[in-house]
Image (cartoon, rainbow, N blue to C red; front, side):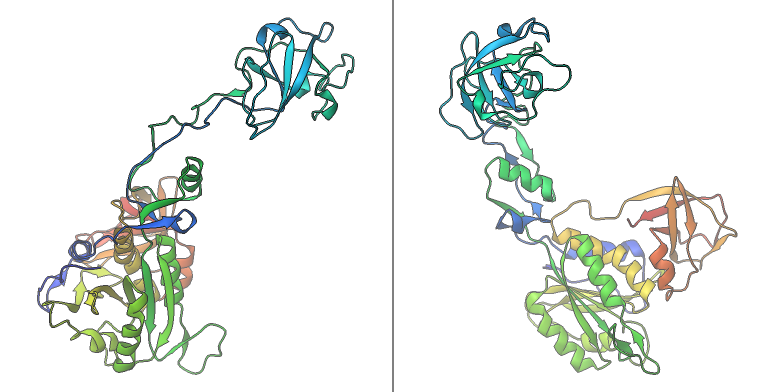
Length: 440
């Protein structure tokens, strides 16, 4: 939810990429924390540090199927002269009352079962006759523990050291240790740890709900037949997928025709399920740029400065942009250009950081690196614009993919990085060290 209106700068102000991003991140605030069940918290950001209430494992236990023994009783055991021990019973995983292992005794034990009192180590079943009364043989012994072993005898053919094949209490984490830090994104391993220490619920910032809406009467849904002058709607699919990749719960709305009132109604209908609205198309200076027409004057009378401001940015692609807040909850809205590459680059630069901010993360940007440009000819760029070109990054080098056209979807699909050409550069020669934004 936004808490401040965009800066008033005038329609002729040319915003830098950094100014526009700073304005967005100064306005968007993390969502309020909620308590969720573990599986519902997957992908969410942890609000509090988590301290371990009980050690893991909570008791000494066996890491093998075998026999719990005293070290002295198997010292010097060999194939020729095995140690013969009385089997006093079984110890299974989850068993409560434990046997007491005394001199000359062994307890048959299963993987994960508590080490019984008196025992100092676990002999793997492969080092024994499996309790079947077999004579010594070369190689591996019985692969499973025979029920007949209980209350009988077992021959052990190798010695073992103290604590051999024993998982020590607290060897994973100790009670009082910090299990997870606030700000951690909860994936499967983190959820496993929370469950292992007995946490059934956890306080997190929820995944933001992002509604993506494309505009344009020329847009047709995939699988439908194209008529003259029509194209398939790819932007809403690309941006919905990108929002999910960023960590959001994303909803795609079918393309809205070029009618300002229809678009305004569609946006208002979607606000009930949106923490962030994203539109694509209709933000430049054309006669049918309905997003500007529909939203330029939308404002809350009780919140001066609310509404959506449309801007020109010193960047290529993606010069026309819109940003502001709408509706009774002042839901942030980012209006992106309609050309596919412009739309996607704008998402990576502005929408993804906004989503990550809503999640409560502090590191909201894609990673960047420096790379050597490999190309057949110099890259050209308009002076005063920060250009973002598609590229492929590997082993410290980056190679341009496709041209500079903002409609080249196929080139975008082959790219895994953005090559950044700064505002003061009109040409970048092959071999130059350039900044690269890593997309994958």
